[in-house]
Image: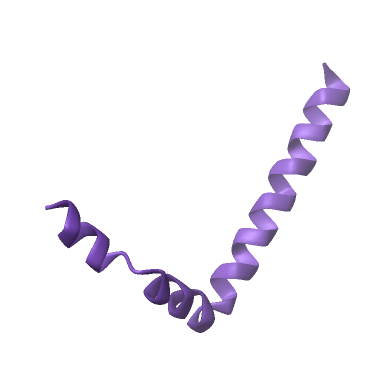
Length: 46
């Protein structure tokens, strides 16, 4: 069961997924920046 999971979750598949979805990478970057900005605002308000 574990070996099957490892076979389906190969690093090559993950890398190819990121290669073909630049918009997903951009979305992830924007979300990260927004969450950091929100944390900063909350820290200033507290």
